[in-house]
Image 1 (spheres, helix red, strand yellow):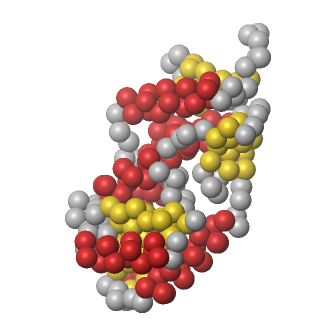
Image 2: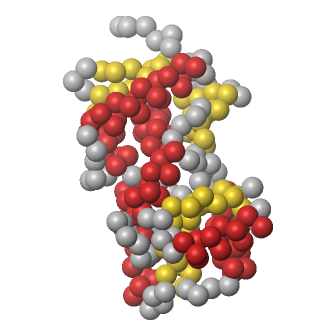
Length: 227
């Protein structure tokens, strides 16, 4: 079953979309603005996002740009009443994958959701380290048959470390890769480091998350000995 997030401030339209998608066996969570949407994305592994352009607190273009700056490549379908070529190009420049102009037929929305989900599912990419496997398409991490429970932010943290294959990665590099220029305080990184370390330990992973004082972090093999 496809799992999507709808970010739309028009409650009546949002209710209609959610109900219709569920009839089509598509699970759909709803957020009424971009800030709420980003918070949900940090906690849930959505397969795609349906994103309205004009919203309070954070508009759709800003939210889409923020996702891409954080390295989150979930497919985005933008909804808007603005149908000029310049508006569409602005949406694509922000990182959207598709564009649907209001008003639209619900059948067309479903078709576009299904096409985007299928397109993404055909692009499976994996990274491995020790007995740890990352599926970059599904945003899942597994140790043997055990699935790690990771938020999108923690998954991105793990991806950055796995790509370096035991090389140290500075805090600055990690925070830039995850949050781009819109970085929170350092406590946010500490929380995700703690959660990732706990998940690796619970899964009996052969990779250990090591803190390197005054430098940053790296993954190393459990049986690695000091030189």
